[in-house]
Length: 208
Ligand SMILES: C[S@@+](CC[C@H](N)C(=O)[O-])C[C@H]1O[C@@H](n2cnc3c(N)ncnc32)[C@H](O)[C@@H]1O
Image (tube, rainbow, N blue to C red):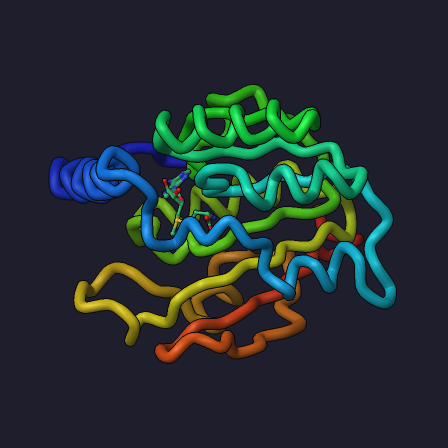
């Protein structure tokens, strides 16, 4: 993959990272509810619950859902761009007495982190929808490379209408285009007062 980025693209990445770091530096970020969403609980504990396997969480924040998954028997690796978030996630896992591998790094550069997979499940709670557009193909390629046959990606994302800026947000059409070799099987609107969606994608079992 061509990793060449323009100066403007690098500036955009730095700006996004800076904003995220500010949120964590200023205290508890607004998204850090400490509550595992019912959509993930349904997948892990509900009727037809998945058999625990290997899961990779992208943009894990302070680790609430990584810890939840580990408590339910999953082998968990979790990644976040912001070191303060990563430290808190590690502390949360330690306090909970569960084994979670929490790494500080970029979900669009998984090759740099020694995460090899394969993973049966990927979980993304509003990470992808904030990643600059020019990095999203690399995100998709990283997951595809590490996906077990038939792996699932459960992603929560904000629709583009939820933001004032032109780069944030995600749509079903975008995911179909950026994840070749995956099937988008479900798009369920979230319960937020602005457009949000739960997306389910499967890595085709026969894909190369
Ligand atoms: C809206 S927050 C959600 C955090 C967490 N999933 C939660 O729900 O509490 C998005 C998270 O993704 C992380 N993030 C954003 N871009 C990332 C990237 N390229 N690689 C890894 N993490 C990223 C941010 O640092 C932040 O913790």
